[in-house]
Every structure is written in C-alpha cells, then in structure tokens.
Length: 325
Ligand code: GLV
Image (cartoon, rainbow, N blue to C red; front, side, top):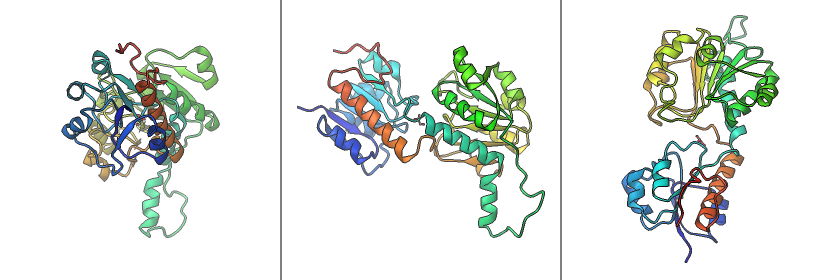
C-alpha cells in the first residue's frame, strides 16, 4: 500500500505527477487555506504532508496525527514548524534551501532599487494622470551605486545579495552570528562589523536572518534610531524580525528615509500605518515567486517527502538526529 499524504496548498501539475507513483495523494488544489483544526482532521491517517509557511505544524498537530513520518515544507524558512517537537516524535522535517537564493536576492534588490528611486510613488503619479512635464528637481531619489550596503544575516541568500553589489560598486558591510570564511569575505568584498556599526554606517540595510525567538524584533525603535536618517531598510526575510509599529513610526517621523518590505508581522493583515505612507514599497511575500523557482521549490519538497517515506534520507533533512523506527 502506498503511503498517504496531504498537500496542503495548490502545487504544480508536475509536482503531483512526481508524487502520484509513490504516494496516495490528497491535494488542496482549490488552494483554500486549511484552518488548524481542519488540518489536524485532514492529516489524521496520513504518513506525510507537503505544507507551506501558512500551515502551523506544532506539538498539538503532531499529537493529533501519530502516523505522520515526514513534514516537507515548501519554503526555506521553517519557523512555521516546531522542529524539536517533530524530532521528539520521530517525524522528519525538511525545507527547500538553495533553489530560491537567486530569486529571493533579486527581490531584495528590486525593493532596494524601487525604494531608492521611488518607483511605486512615481508610477502612482503617472497612473493618476498628474505628470505634466519634466522638471529638474522632480522625484529626487538616492543613489544605490557607490553607497554602503549593510546585510544582517550572511547565509546563502545574504551572500547572493552581496554578490550583486559589486556591479553597483557598493561598499558591503555585514553582521552574522559568526563571520563567514575569509575567502568568502574576499570574494564578496564584504566586511564583518558589529550590528551597531552596520546600522550607523549603511545607506541600505537588508535583513536576511531567519525568524526565531532570538531574531524577534531584531530591528525595533532603538535600532531604527541608530540608522542614518537617509537610510532605507529592506525586509525580505520574515515578518517579526522587524517591529512593524516601530517602523511605521520611524517612516512617519523621518527617523529613516524609506523602506522596502516583502514580509510583515501578522501577514496578510499588515500594520495599517504602512498603507498611508509614501516612503515604503510594499510586496505581498513574493521573494521566491518566479515561475521557475516556485516550481523548483515544490519539486524539492516533493523529493524530500518521497525520500523520507521510502526509507531514504531526505536531501534537506532539518533534524538528522530524528530516530526513525
Ligand atoms: C519563503 O518565504 C521561504 O522561506 O521560502
């Protein structure tokens, strides 16, 4: 008998085609988000789940679904999964690292360029039919080229963001729990500094740390005050890394110049203050959302799931210490 799995959100046809020979698949192709209690019901009796960052996999859910052997997240971030709770119950947890680094780095850059050159503001102006002609002092932005870029979190995606900075001849600062290898620093022309120095010296600050209790509100009112008044903050990692209420206040009173945000606290109900501000570029958590990358993420998760359910070690196992029966 094939193992039974649930795919919690809509995926691509090729993902289902890959899964079908290996698993008995129930898939939510209508893409209606499944509430926590309904998720427990639909997962009861399943051996595996392919889930997304909108699904919370915690101890309660795992206890309600004792047959579960593999939880395959379609995301690199896995703060929606209680990995220690999975480990304690012998459940493998996996994510999708690597395949989304470039697309996510591109989106961070898109936000940075858009905020620096005020692209969403000027587009609104043109669409409203307000453009009456060219003026020398119209819509002045700030330069990205030759500016100082500060990256907080120098993992794979942080490094991919840094790589792009050389074309813009930027000075790159970074902070990370521990400095990256010297040859990586040299290749990226990046200097390890303290968080305070990074905040004080950077024209653009990009956040690329995973969300966890340690990174909750890593940027709050105190940190925003340490930034240059001309600086722009980019959050393309996870909501909660920034204290959004503090950011709204800082953007309103000119503590910093602007922001570019792809992620928010309490998505999709973002802080209403953002909607009234012109100096923030907003995107709906689309960091990895290109056709090719989302297909690759779904396939990576499917391969992790099938590997775990067929007695192999999933390529992206988050809890290798898990004891399997
Ligand atoms: C998306 O946010 C991801 O973590 O992959």
